Length: 350
Ligand code: PMP
Image 1: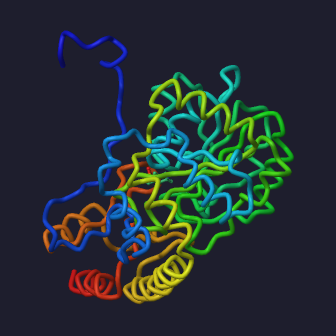
Image 2: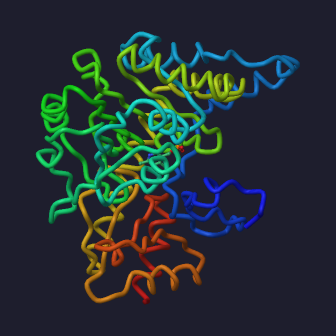
């Protein structure tokens, strides 16, 4: 610890991202990347940007991307915000959209970046326990709050809430922002974006890192009422006016325009998930119903930390969390049929 650090920095407990190993031959099923790669049209659009125009700053508003998102979802561009990964979009939301007087509510088992942002931006929060089935019960959130956030489907459980439940919550909490983090929505869920015109307190975030296979490009979006978007723009313009570079704007826009690649690859992941779940169940695992590109599974007779370590020795990485109630679970990204088979075979011999 340096004597030059401010007390504020000394107290920061940062988010710890999943391992990004250098070895390519590993079967990497730990950070929910997409095995199928981005749209060829996105790659083409980025190649077309690799020229002298890189000496110029990008469009600070990312209009080309906002227009593509607006067209894709049938909203207007002023209902769209774009940022450097949904993590950055979330950071701006934590910075300025939640009230300070009452606590922000989120599940006790959820994306572990939320408490980190709360601590960074001084947002009071309370966690709400998931039910016995590791599901969010929206009735538990129907009380005065400074905002509500959860992923749908939730992470790392993979469990989905139906839109009716989200709408019930919007009706019971009309005076604070509900942020639905749809990082994994494209793998079988129904987006809440269709509700933003009716509920001015709803903000939906999505990422291009999962279903669009562009984790390395770092692009996330938010869709909501123009006033919420305007707040995010103010914060962004007080922080970094150019969060998206020229390649990211072009590639992400083209990704939204290529519906065929998107449909085909997400259906492939959904199909692979079914095979993976069936294989794990045959090996005696209990697998939570998943609507994401990962599954959350535990074995009644085997210790999860030991399983993860043993798989690691065999070159297969999965994610294990040392958190109460879920320490016996493994979170396994849905890979290609070959990767999933390698995992199942390794588990079979353990
Ligand atoms: N929300 C959830 C629930 C996630 O799991 C992730 C990925 N770790 C993110 C947001 C952030 O994704 P990205 O910054 O790559 O858009």
